[in-house]
Length: 337
Image 1 (spheres, rainbow, N blue to C red):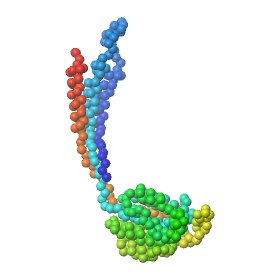
Image 2 (cartoon, helix red, strand yellow):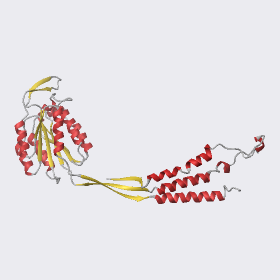
Image 3 (cartoon, one colour):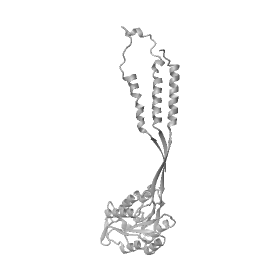
Image 4 (spheres, rainbow, N blue to C red):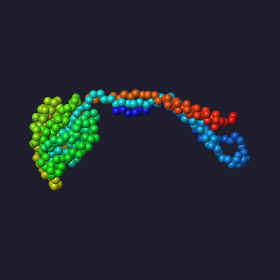
C-alpha cells in the first residue's frame, strides 16, 4: 500500500515566521496613532473626495513582503513530500472455517440466543483479529456448502457469516437437508485449500453433533493429513445430558445432546490438530483465542519512505512576491520622501 505524506525536516524553524508578524501587527493595527499636525477643526481636511484606492491598498506592498518572509521561512524548514510504501515480508496462512448449521445448533444453552448465533459472534471476533491471512467459509448440514472462497476481503466474509442461517430456517423445502455431515464439511474445506501454496493451511471445524450423513470423518481427516492440512475440531455443548431446542411453533423441547467427542478427537489427532470442547460462550471464546495464538502468520511489515524536498516552490513564490512588492512601491505606491 502506498500513501502520500508531508513533513518538515526542520520544523522548529517555523517559529521564525512569527518574527516579523508581531511588529507588523503592532505597527499597523495595535499601536495608538499620534497626530503629527494639530488642527482646530478637522473639517479643514475634508475635501469631499474621500479615500482613494491607493490609500486603501497602501499596505499591500508590506503584506506582500510579510507573506514572502513566511514563504522563505517555510522553505528554510525544508518541506518534504514522500511516498510511503508498506511492504510485507513473508506469507500469511490460509484458514477455512467449517460450521455446522444443522437444526441442533438452535439449542438455547449458549448466549446470546442460540449455539449458531454464539458461534457467529465468536468467529466474527476471530476473523477481525486476523490481518494477513486468507479466510474461507464452509457451512454443512446433510450436505456441505461453500459460503466464501479464500480471501483477504474480511468485510465480505463477515457479511456472508452474518447471513448464515440454520437449515431449519430455510423453509419447508429444506427439511430433507437437515443432518450433520462432518466428513463432508472437512472434505469441502480440504477442496478449498488443496491448491493453496500458503506455508500453513488450517481447517477449524465446529459442530455439536454426531456424523450421520455423507463421508466418514476419519477418511476426510486422512485426506487432509495427506495434503498437509491441519484440522482443529471444536465441539459445542455437553457430551451428554439434555439441551433446550426451540420448535418452529415457538415451543421449547428438551433433547439429548449427541456430541461425538471421540470422533472429533480422532479427526484432530489424524490431521495434526487439536480438539477443543466448549460448553458456553466464554469457553468458546477461549477456544478461538487459543487457536488464534497457535496459528500466527510469519508476516513482517516494513515501511519505506522516499522523501523529496519541496522548498523550491516556496522560494519561487517568495521571489515573485518580493518582485511584485518592489514594482508596486516604485510605481503605484511610490512615496515622496
